[in-house]
Structures are given as structure tokens and as C-alpha cells.
Image 1 (cartoon, rainbow, N blue to C red):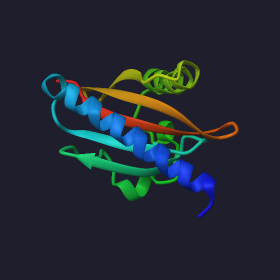
Image 2: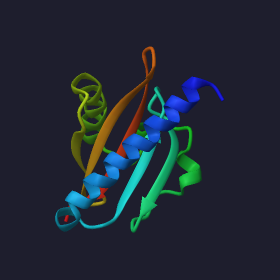
Image 3: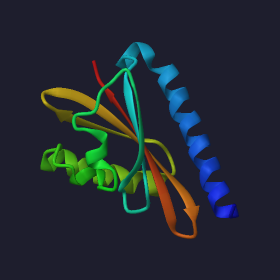
Image 4: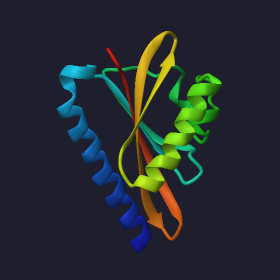
Length: 130
């Protein structure tokens, strides 16, 4: 196995652990359900997971598509999410982006992780705000 694949796998494990710890901190604030998306450098969905929450569309439909090109977000929220990706890259911190879908409020927590030279993976955790 190439060293870059091993490093990428370790990144996924580390970031998933960080996202899970965020869940423990906010159980009382935002409920227990969440969706997690793993995105490649182009922000296309390569993996996903869910816990006590369902996807708006079937998961097989969105694999390989950019998360902002699924047609679910209005233009304002789509721009906010794109800006969140840029902030996550620049700040190297978790960026929270609130948005609405079907009159419900959500927050997307975005983490950018450098994998190779200038390539990145993104991890997005989505929770409904109650």
C-alpha cells in the first residue's frame, strides 16, 4: 500500500474522531442525528455516513457530485457553503455554516485536511438545529 493512501486513511480516521467528539459536546444543543460527508479535492462526495438522520435524496444519487451542485440549497446558502470551504482551508479550523432546507435550520461543520502537496479532503458534518 502506498504511503499516501495510508496517510489519507489516517486523516479520515483522525477527522472522523474529531467530528464524533463534536457530537458528544453538542448532544443537548442540536439533537443526536447527523450526516457526515467526505469530499475529495474537487468537493465531490466520495463517502457518507448517517446517524439518526436521513438524507434528503438517495445516497447513490449524490456520489461523485459536488455537494453544492445537488440542487438542494438556494443560491445564498450555496454561496455560504462555498465560502465555508474557503475559510476552512485558510483558517485550518472547523468552520460552521448555517443554512435552511425545507424550512428547517441546519449547520454544516466543515474541516479541510491537506493530503498531498496542494490536494485536500473535506469532511462535512450536517446537523439540524433545534
